[in-house]
Image (tube, rainbow, N blue to C red):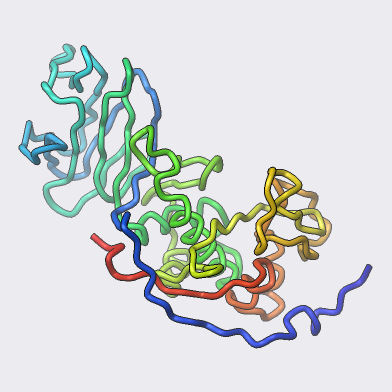
Length: 296
């Protein structure tokens, strides 16, 4: 079946600015290492370790030096002079004293790290503002060399997914994983000028349906036709309907639901803007703006 491009966007794009707030407005928390036997971190500048409950400074960490942490008797222990020393706390926060970056997993991250005991293991969490988080997501999920309007569409979809899924992994002490299981996130090391601009240009914009932010599922490619949400999952979502995916001869890669990233890039190269692209892949939606309470 052939589709005429002049017909697929035969509607008026309406951008409604709504101030969406939430009782859970806070910086997002991303799990970098879950149920790990030990974790290691470094800071580009001098950093301080705090008790997460009281904000009391426990100790200072030297710049550009790796420190190792593990769980000892349900306390966070730090390795000093080749020996683990218990801090006396079950959760600690590590924050650069001046503007700087934190490192783990061979990458640099903005914001702060939380190390929490979990059973006999530890979880390492990156806490940072939502918009800053997205700068590490967009180029991890989509090539930063792709069309600017595709990158903007990706930024809005990723922001919507994150907001709709806040608290998804609350039992582990964070919101989302840093893997494609939720959204790929590479921290500051992944950032590129083009994708940062896409995030900035769409700041706080999300997709809503019936005044609720939607989890804007997306996939690498859908193999010519996106999939109704009820096919891979047990429920149909009214804004996720099957449509031609415009990803050409690229075979299906992922669940096939929602926006095809390759399709979005193809449409952007054909002259369609981010809002047209998103209005095509997600049905009966509006564009809304989050309240400033999301910022820390």
